[in-house]
Amino acid sequence: MTTHPTLLVVDDEPGILKLVERFARKEGFEVLLRSSGRETLRELHELKADVAMVDLRMPEVGGLDVLKAIREADPGCQVILMTGEASIDTAIEAIKLGAMDYVSKPLDFDRIARLLRSVRGDLDRRRAVLTTEREVAQQLQFCGMIGRSPVMQELFGLIRRFAPHVRTALISGETGTGKELVALALHQTGPRSARKFVTINCSAVVETLFESELFGHMRGAFTGATDNKPGVFEVADGGTLFLDEVGELPLAAQAKLLRTLETGEVQRVGGLDTRRVDVRVVAATNRDLLAEVAAGRFRSDLYYRLNIVELRLSPLRERKEDIPYLTAAFVREFSKRFHKSILGPTPAAERLLMTTRWPGNVRELRNVIERVCILCDGNFFSERELLPMLSPSSREAAAAAAVLDRQAALAERADAEDRPLLASAEREHIRKVLQSTGNNKKVAAEMLGLSRRALYRRLERLGLR
Image (cartoon, rainbow, N blue to C red):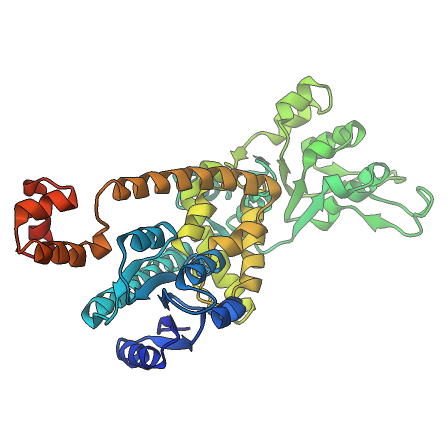
């Protein structure tokens, strides 16, 4: 795992490159050097840097163009502009384009040290947060599920209480919420854990074969029945049978399922004898079965027979506090599988994960993280890497959230621009104005567009008194 942050330095002066390189290495940074903006743009997608120092005035491709390209390609990379010609207007434009700060030449290395240490501190804190989330995710895991939210903690408690006793249960929830994991948890934490756990997806069975799949058939019972075959009830005898998407069962199969649940007996298709089975049945559905009952598509007596215990799974959008821990668990799984040192999302990428609605729920989140981890080359993945992996509906919702974020950011920047001076350049500017007025603070305040009291406050804050 990379422990040293990386600094990219772009300047057409070899002396500056060497000077910054020596200084940055002493500060604990790996350093990449590029002598032109054009060279940097050509290699930008291969350069993975945590912070960049870019000269403003370079031939062919200037620093502002490089700044825009870096912010477009890697929003997590902080950019510090360097220039020998300080300008308030240029500083404002640089900050609007996303620059972290703006430093004048000759370089003030005490100030640069503070900026680099700030970047390194942010990275260290991010690593610490993601490491903590990964550790917490391991502690929160219950039978393959992760949930810190109250609804998930309540669900885990219900599973622990029901597992030793229930013989029939119904699990409801949207697609991708983890219904099979809940069924498996009921099996693993109950007295049948050493026996078979058998799954049948009712939505994947041809309608004419439902009875054969559930109850088995005898040789010659129908065309193609060349051998005797046990159904899933017999296969699961002594263990647990999970009926996924039970709402897809045709009415004829529903009637025979109800009889088996009530008598504990199965009769193979084409057979005369019945066989007793001892099976825990856990059914799951993403449909509203009461609405299906009202529409005549699902038997009411079967519904109430299955619904002795019902466990409802909340969609991911209603338990967003679980997203960081689910993400941490998935990143851990896939970084290990792909032999990478990925820690997790940048803060902006995590905000995107939190604002996405996830119509496919936990399954969609897991698939997205897998695809991102395949493509990620560094310790963190950004929102730019994440956004193309989202479903179209998720991208639309994320785009709407991003518009709100940009509006808030523009409002914040507008507030900053309402001030006559930009914080990163105002010290030098105020000093020059005071020198030009012979240290006459009244005249200097007028030139700066400030009241004398406001000027005194700034002098105090900037240490110029």
